Length: 473
Image (cartoon, rainbow, N blue to C red; front, side):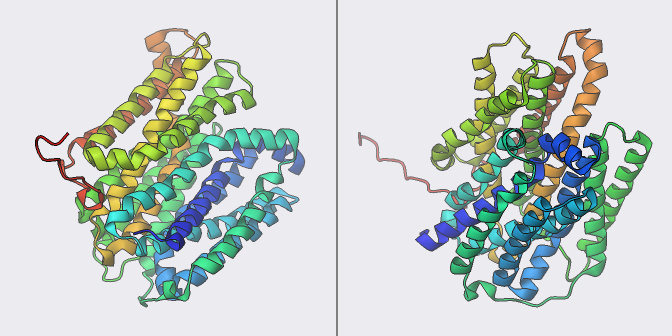
């Protein structure tokens, strides 16, 4: 049974999740304003976002070791404090190097804030309550990449870019006060273990390199030979890291949790689903502006219908999973998302606005249901003693997919230019047709993973009503 303190802690972590994800993307639309204020080209401001995402990717794997060494309470409180103070530092920055440095510090706080907070919640959650608790935690994070373009446009239009970061200060102070009250000393029990220095170097170096390579892919001025070489090198480093983590007695991240079939599915198919979820708002907003001629504010308002779908389906997500099970729901969510992506790709400037809004809303329904299902089924069969390591690995892959989403969208769009011209001729928006179709195919790969699920997978966290006796109306 979920008591009030447990539920409030879940809401606290959900709020932290929202802040962390919002700050990863809100800077995008504000790049011209920040560049003009700091006296640098708008393209240089991309480093502000990359520094933050890179720091998150590098330090999230360290969160499990820190909490086992220092305890949950001090790490979680310190993470919120660091994130809040760094946000204030970002707003006060007078040059690009200072802003980038503050973003790195902000990333340090964000990297510890959400994984550690999730661990607090999960450590108190019975399997029977996991579905409801994960629904609390997941959906606010879905809001961030959807509202970020509109929020960034509104803030820079009617205020100044500093408010992109100042809005975190009152939220951070409130979160710290709530965490101080909710996270007790009982949450700080520790089990000391040595730090896996080689695993730290290989894992964090590979993740950081891949995140930076994603930035280079998104940067139209970056050379492909350098980007391809860096990507291949980082993938090789991560392969060596995986080999090391499977063999060392005290790994930085325990990969043996992937032996649990449902957790392995959440980290493979769920990873692809997260990429589509992160790439779609970016591509949709860009298409609305470049192909349909909408303003940044109008396109942001249209993309907001994705969140309307997230919000509308939320009350039904848990009942759907309890009624039908994880396999049918994941099949429906991945297929629906694939169809929505393909449908958006074939829209044109003459497509009625309500149809665009409807496709966005339906894709929001699919992503909300799918991500809640993946997040829950991933932990449904994980033994309690492996929950900390599973949570860390899940947070790492989720952050990596978020960092790669824009790069995947950019690659899909670049591939769409020659392919679109070859298939559709000179039709306007052909590149976006190909790009959205590629996202749809990616979602279908996740469908293939869901097909391999056992029909009863995830039943440990479902509330299954027994069938009524025959003749009972």
